[in-house]
Length: 326
Image 1 (cartoon, rainbow, N blue to C red):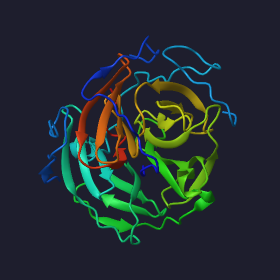
Image 2 (image 1 turned 90 degrees about the vertical axis):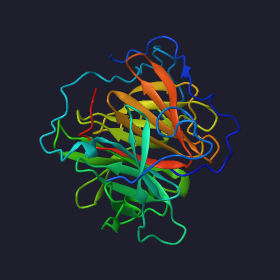
Image 3 (image 1 turned 180 degrees about the vertical axis):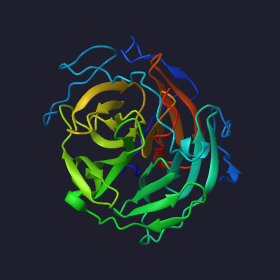
């Protein structure tokens, strides 16, 4: 998601695990390899509710009755319609228009290519989602939605009409309707460009249907990710003063936040994105607006770890619901 207007002064120490306190109750075609100065961590880039309500969670404490997020072990996703292993990678798009794949087991970034969408001059990528076939949808900061191949980075316009129900720009992510193969793209409105907020869904004909405002907790500047098991999660800030971010579990039919866990020490920074892969959550954040860190949240043990970085600003991430669930 787009860069913030303010400057973040401090960032996390790199390549360290951050203590989370008590258990939170969670259950247990590419051409170039990323490299460059100023990068660090593991992988290929190594060295290289109500309005005003603001109660939150800390560790496994229940605040206002809202529990931590729950990621239960469910039957693995039905992959009968999944094309090949490439569709299970995480993909990210940078503010510099470059599409990368990201492979969580070894924290490896590989460049797919630079997208060349028929966008207005000065428009830049804002958020991204990837479907079961490995096709990305990328929304730009002017509200235009494009279809992009994750194999070649080829881009084409869609019939999506901008500003439907007041959704000017939005974070986005696919989630299965059931345990595959049907899925829906969900979007979280962002007020940064004067647009509506809350949760909506976009159907196969690019019509947007508003679901409702998030409740009972405030959800600001959210990015979304979904699973093949049908869960939907959001990565967001609580307000402009809380330095930490949160991961919330969202009821897709009502926009209710049914669980929330604080990501202690993780600020969205000046650009952010979010993905779920193999039972873990990956948060892509830019502390200074010059590069992006990749932070893994592992529900099994509650660890929060910076695993690698990229010398560009990641503003969108997407992962197929065919990807591993645990």
